[in-house]
Length: 147
Image (cartoon, rainbow, N blue to C red; front, side):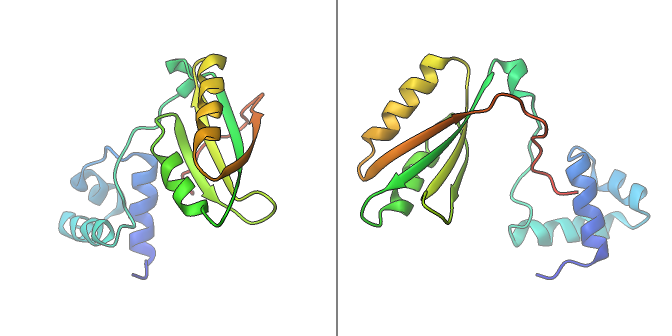
């Protein structure tokens, strides 16, 4: 699906505030509610819009540790490993990457003991050869919305 300027305006408005109703969006953007609804429906059907969620402050919920973990896999099992890692509750992102590392994980933890347990569980996944864990000291920006 090719997005036009109208679709782009709708997406940007939803990224800014996904709680806006179709009517509110239409008023804000100067178009009809039917147009907004039909375009949102098309983008949902095309999986451009995958869902709606709140942006939360993880630290205020006690998740004060962010880890970026590199995974090196054995025997071309990268995709199987990534699927397994994706099931872990603390995992925010799993990325299949180029370079000497096969996969990068971003995960959040409340305590060092949780992180320690998590890294040990990663090592138990078949065909995980090695992990390299980096702890984030400061977060300058963490916002995956494109604007």
